[in-house]
Amino acid sequence: MGRKWTKAQFKEAFKRGLGSSYLMLKESNNREKYMDIVLWCCLRNTRYDMQCEGGRGSFLYKAICLYEDKSCFEEAIIRKFMQKNLDTGLFSQLCELLYLFAAEGSTKPRETLYEKYNALLGLLSRRNNPAVKESLEWLCVWLTSLDGFSAFKSIVMHLGEYAFNNGEATDTDWFYSNAKNKFGVKRVDTFLQSNAAKSDYVKAFLNSASQTTNHDRRAFEPPALEELIEAAKEKQGGFRSRGLALRFSRTATEDELLRLAEYAVQETDLEIKLELLWSFKKVRFPLGEQFIFELAECDNEAIRAVAFEMLQHLPSDRIHGYAINLIKQKKELASALSLLCYCYESDDEAILLEGIQSLPVSYEDGGWHGVFKDVENLLDNRLVRMDSAVFTYIYRQTLCSYCRHKLIKGMSKRKMLSKEMLEECVHDSYKDTRDFAIRRLGKGPVK
Image 1: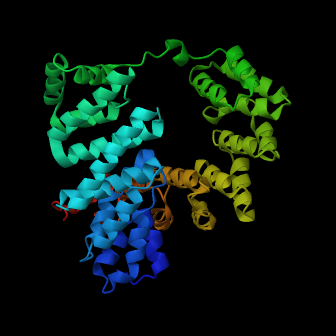
Image 2: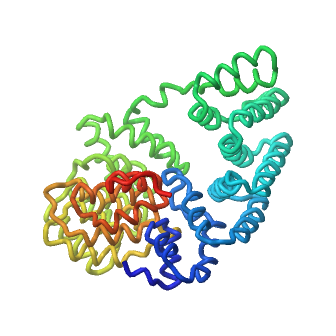
Image 3: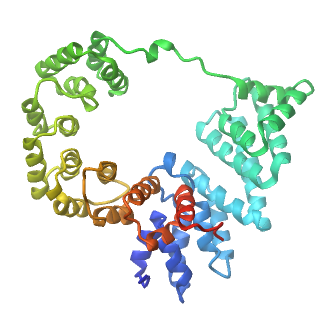
């Protein structure tokens, strides 16, 4: 498979969670050469999208286990874990790694997890800090994985004591639902309900966990055009007006969309114009292409970005030529590449590949992320005939393991997946990718 990589190549693949990096490390005769990179990734959150990707702990721990002496990893992870003010992504990763060490019988990681638990409980009692609550909840989940139902009962008492003494909910919905998934709904609820009558703390936890938020139904009703225009004029960061704009676009009549478009065309304040145009990110703009082309050349970057999304709903020869011309000039490259995916033609494959290879892929600039997703969507269009090269490039380059999973499934349907790639996917950082590859290869559980 040609896995004689430089350290830089290994680092790029390993931080992405590619199974090929694990296989290279496993087959290497000089693993010590890459040890600092494995540790570097353990002590940093290398996920691009925390909400979608899941944890990297098991992927990292498998790599750690390739080394005979794991103690240097364990010690460094403990030191990092005990630092204050870690971001949630890194904290959850370190929790999982220490859990895996402890689950294999290592004493110090277990002691460290409980030491941090007690410290966070103390902080919880002294000040209402959302970051402390979130970290504590992560830790509670891993402690119940480590020590089972006895840990759940102890944690319920501690969190219930906090809720009882402070008269406020502990925001532990995830911990509660995770416990029900682990131990069964009947066991969890039977314990809570039978003990609530005997313990104020259990009762307080149960009341806290059972609270539901009553949402204002009006917040989900489609807004009137006048309400949308008023919200756009508020200029308060766009959050409210953009939510209204997207809801408006889902239910608006053709006449309402036409009136909104005419109002947006006449608006001279660019901030207000931007908010008014937000509806047309999702629906066709009714006044034709010319106005959108003018917006795409606007000095305002945010308006240009919206204009390119508006053009996606109006595929035409002119728009196709416009996208191709921008790509050749390397202007508005991310927006132009995404646009090309909506008016893609059979002769575009080479320029599409060249274009995405020119895009910088980094955590700081996420322009590549939207482009990669739009290219991946071409796999769903059976009328599009493409070679695997562009998709293989995205597979290697994306920083998002969730997107990689969706890509792999699409490539599989197109019969573009080689056995080598499937073998790599067995060791991918994303669990669903691993499970998919194992099923496709007809393998049993992978050690």
